Amino acid sequence: MTAKKIPRKSVDRLRFKEFLTVAGQNMEAAADNMKSDLWTPAGILIVHSSIAYTDALTIKAAGVRSSGEHHAMAVDLVAQVLELKREDQNALAHFRRIIGEKARVLWTSSRLASVIDPAAMMLKRSPKL
Picture 1 (tube, rainbow, N blue to C red):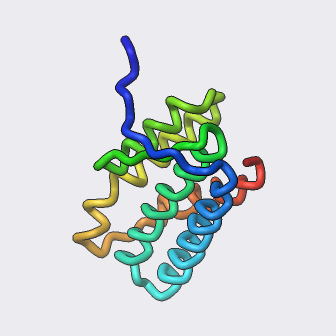
Picture 2 (cartoon, rainbow, N blue to C red):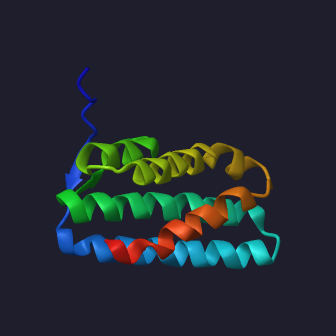
């Protein structure tokens, strides 16, 4: 079975740092919001941080980012352009879960403490890029 082609946009590989910076800033802002019990904006920022991080990965590896209409396509593109180890596949599955929470986060004030700690841990590993 052939993998579905993900719509993509070419991006200069050096710009991965910009996306990584955005991912980190969004995660820091999410943590600040959580300290103030502002769960909806925190959750939205976590989702956007995850998307920026997946864009940073694909830009660094292949000079492309997803231009698909669904955020999950950004995660799918990571799997297409990177050779993933088992631990990387677990991290990617976590990103997929975070992005899948977007609708619930937008319309409820649910606590997302279960996703912020692992997401922050992934961002701490970003120097491996």
